Length: 315
Ligand code: BDR
Ligand code: CA
Image 1: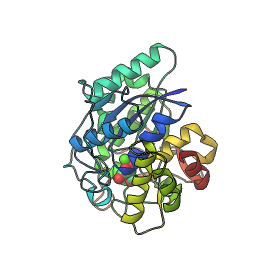
Image 2 (image 1 turned 90 degrees about the vertical axis):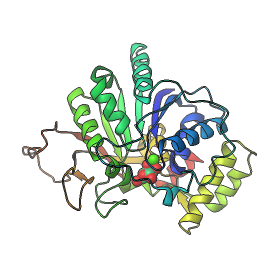
Image 3 (image 1 turned 135 degrees about the horizontal axis):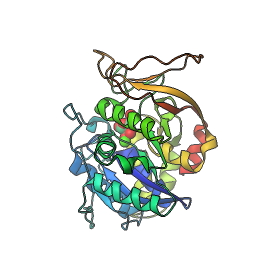
C-alpha cells in the first residue's frame, strides 16, 4: 500500500478524504497533520480525531500545526462547513488525543522514516499549505525526501474564495509559493488537484442515505451525514466529495487527465492575490522571469476528470 500523509483543515470534504485514506486497502495512512483553514485549528484537530475514530483508525497520529497563515490573518469558511467546521457532526467528543509533536515535527519524523525504509511518502495537502511551507524552510533535507506532493488547491480556470482565487491558496498564498519553489529546487514532483476538477465527483442524497444506513457511528453514518449536510447547504440533490477526489486520484490516476504546466502564485495583485497562474500557452520559449525570485515550478495540473468513476471509488 502507498504510504500517505494528509495535511487537512477538517472540513466536511477533508473528512470525506480522511475516511477514504484510512479505509482504502491500497493506501497506508501514516499521519494526519492539521492547519487552521476551514475552521480554527482547535476545531480542525478535534474534527480530525472524530473522523479517525469513526474509521476505527485511532492508531494514526494527528499533529496540530499552524493556527495562522504565514502573513495574513486567518479567514475561515465556517459559513460553508458549519459552526464546528464539520456540518455539526463533531459530536460526541473524541476519546483520543493529538500527538504531542507539532505537525511539522510529525511530518519530519514520518517522511524521514518512510524514506529510510525505501518507500517514500506521498504528501497530500488538502488545506492552506502553511505547515508544508514551514517544513520546507525548517527541514529542507526532509522536504527533499518526500516522494510526491498531490495537493488540492488553485485552479487554471475556476475560482471560489474570490473571483480570482481558490480558498486554500487564497488563505496562505506565500505558503503555496514556498512549497512550489521548494519542490522545484528539490525535484519533488507535484500534482495540483484544483477547482477545474474538484466539483465533478458527486454523490447523491439517495446514495448518502444508503451510506448512513450502513452503521450507527461508523464511517457510513459519518460519510452519509457529511454528504447530506453539504447537499442541504447548497440546496442540491447531491454534493461534491471535494478534497476526497485528490485522495481517490492516488488510487485511480487514470480517472484524471493532467498536463505538465508552469504554475505560479499571484502574491501581489489587488484583485488577484492567491490566484494560481497556470501557463497553458502552447510554446516552448524561455519562461517569464519570476518577480519574487522564486524557482520556476512545473506541475501536473488536473484539467479533466471522470467524475462518476471517482465518486464510485469513494462510495
Ligand atoms: C478547498 O477549500 C476548503 O474549503 C475545502 O476543504 C477544500 O480543501 C476548496 O477550495
Ligand atoms: Ca480542505
